[in-house]
Image (cartoon, rainbow, N blue to C red):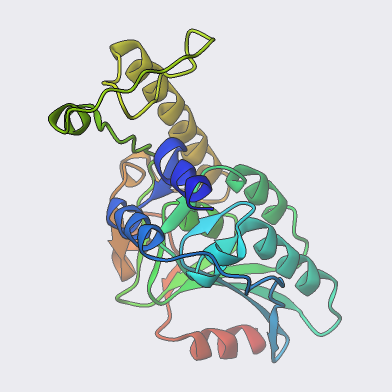
Length: 259
């Protein structure tokens, strides 16, 4: 299980604030697996509003352990939205977001599905909707946040560990037997070649362009608002990433219930 998580952390592109990526890696190293968190959550229904909670680091095909750590699966998000979509008691779907972002894998597919929702879709955060979470929020018909909440961090990166110097200092040498010229391009026991770096940079740039294009489908944010910076409250509105500020989730529910 740890090997699977470390592969996600160190070999896949992420759309997340760097400090949260580092904290997640530290947490994975500190904890073991668990058999809890096997069931998908259900949307909360309050006064005609179907609330889909999107909290923590986001990803696709998460394990019970990852969910125990507070992560949210893209598949669970869509499952909740679908339930709210067909519920006769729900008039508006609210994405309640508190997330620094997550993996690219599964994210553009979720975004396409969210933009297909027929009921009014509103996104709200009173903490943060950053990077992958901002991508999700941008799929809503309206984006709201509290005065101190932040949104943005529109960027993509991949973090690869280079342990070659550490291994050399320990007097260790890895003898790799492999087939396929590019099989070990990202192996952590050797320095990265310029060719590999250029290829990975091209992949990251590709996804950043897709990220910006997707945000622009429903948002009018200028290019200058999509460089990786985050914006708080009214700054986010000025940056084109939000439509207004509301102080609490309860106030948002009241607003939508009376709409």
